Length: 285
Image (tube, rainbow, N blue to C red; front, side, top):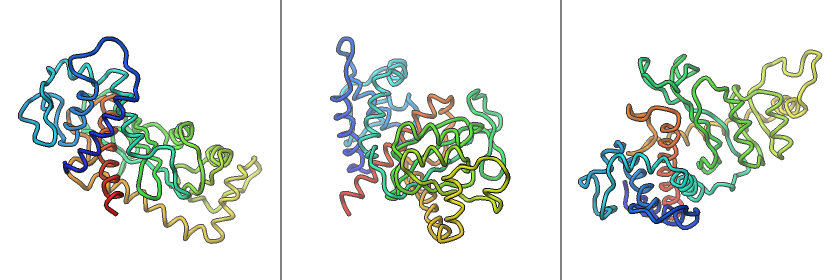
């Protein structure tokens, strides 16, 4: 990892350690060190046991003492370490700040066909059906992913989109693919102050059932210039590409990351590293 990127990550960890309330007695290994060790291992695509070896560190980050593997595995699962990881992501991704144009989409994270992971489910994936998980992302025009979730592949994308709305105020225009075409989702985003635009069938609005007013407005927009605007949806594909196009990026799920809890933590770590790189690019621009 670039030293400037790691410095950005470490500064965010220290800030999170100060802002998240502590409980109980002072520990031999601080939560800040545990979180830093986890992000260090994730940035190098290594296991938790690798992070407990002295030879795994260099001049950019070298803890004085290291916990045992069992200590490290237990500590990274604690509520405070989880809260710190969320704080670090919120700071680096500038959560709460959306652009006038944003995007909602999903990216499949598949596992092997013979994996014993009970949380990995079968669902739509590139090339057909697959087994694993899906990253559901609400991305901004400047290529941040402030709001995200990881769920098994069999969970509906529009259902998760509705949950994402509980954590971020909808505003401006939101572009999504046909998987998000649902009248109730159009209405929820409209009620929150945003405007959803997805591809619609030719007979949208036909029939005798009540139709979503927001969806009908989108159908009218498709008769005008909506097609030109919708081309901007490719921006989220570029964002997904940028999360994976560097060493330590979110390219795939390694074989030691299995189970929904571990997958969520791993994906969160990768997005933290991605946003640290984004922050460095922003400062140098």
